[in-house]
Amino acid sequence: MDIQFDLGAIRSVAMLFWEKFASDRVFAFHGVMGAGKTTFIRALCEARGVQDAIGSPTFSIINEYHYPQSGKIFHIDLYRLKDEEEAVRAGVEDILYGKSLCLVEWPERAPEIFPPGTVHLHLDVLDPLTRKITSFESI
Image (cartoon, rainbow, N blue to C red):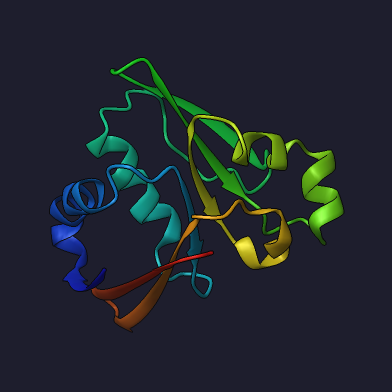
């Protein structure tokens, strides 16, 4: 997936995302501070029908949301962690290898804990209102 979009179209891009990655479960979001990782994840959760308050898990590390198909989405932010060991102690690895959808910000903090098949997405800022998402799958 390689898509450029205006932030005003983020909801339609989120719907396209779920169509493209319907069978994938773990997503790692890369990008500089302010690239829009949390904003895009919020749009993804809303597209799945999440009714919970969707916010950044920067301090809690892990937020759990529920969506209508009796599913869970885990929103994980590794920014405050130093390494894989801290992520494992926080329970992140268990969640990544579980059955729920996982949307992870700052995956470069603990790159070795991600399961094979993780979809990595890079968000780039093209201008204040335009973003580009590029994806690849890990082996």
